[in-house]
Length: 445
Image (cartoon, rainbow, N blue to C red; front, side, top):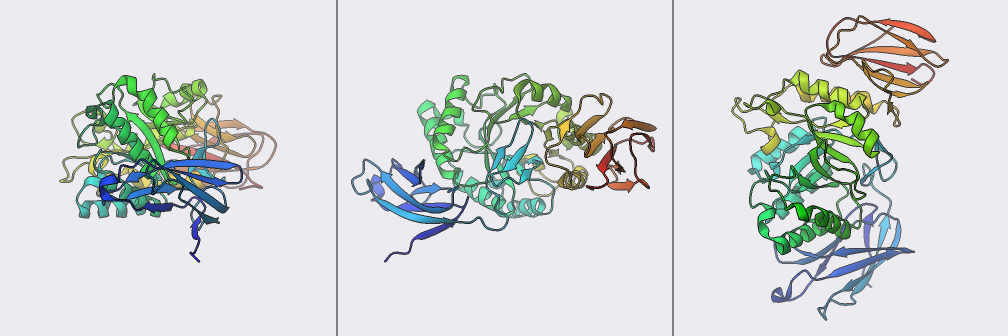
């Protein structure tokens, strides 16, 4: 008796179908079913010429599968497998939990803190290893990278490596700066096949996000193809991973197939109107890069990039990191990866630590118009002062006793004030740049 295959929940089941090499064309679908739940996964042909189908089961129990193909030797093949509990560190794919937040499929909150390294997986082996070492010791929970036709095997390997580190892989399907052949130059039929192969190949990995197009208008894909590209992603991605495109703040992110916004803007305050208008989580994935290139967007000081990250978070959004130094003898991180040489990453690690101990349902409060503020009323408040050197702040909070922490976001120190505070009170501040204030309910801190 053949052993039944076993896979963990949100793991990867892989089926190989043997057919003569001359007849391999990838024209195969497999239906997976458990109870009333039915999903269809398309096949793809890997670099070795093998015909494969992958599937990510989201429910525990015994699944059945049935192949459908015009090829007589493949049609109606069937089998079953058992899906067991998720292993340690496996929380499933990230989903949108409400109009401002993300969570994993098992309900664990997720605070995206991204970085861009567009072509890191195409670099030489030593640079790829350095990139993974840097990511393993850094603050980032998501890496943005561009797919390249003909290099999907290397991309898949990178997605697997990031999954091992617990890092999300945002795959930009049409990207003008990814290197290699531009997908837009393939012609409509060819780019449709490219989308089908890419999505069918990677949809089984729980750490994948889709960015269908980056920088619309720069030749990354024909304008008439954007809606169709989104439709194809939805069709071939049975797992319904997160989907967006990356564009200016005045772009239309309202379409139902877009799960969250991915904005290019040097002003992170756009988070507030975008969140209000679209009712979706807002990510500023392009606010500029710490670096020393001649253009303004790639020559931010580390202080400015860290300030933007804190400002964006305290407005209820998410801000991604980028680094683009060119005078230190290394290729820019945001293209080739490797090693970070800037000063912002350790400070972003500190921000991540602060968020890790915060409640999951924080909301932006516009009442504090002069200092961006996240809050869970009566429980938790996080207020950022950024470029302001306030001498004091005054509060009037719901009944209860509160601890107050003064946070130096640049020097990464937290000073808890003596005693507790309640009702109306005043907090003295050191009149310095880049400070924040955290207020926590004393009986819940």
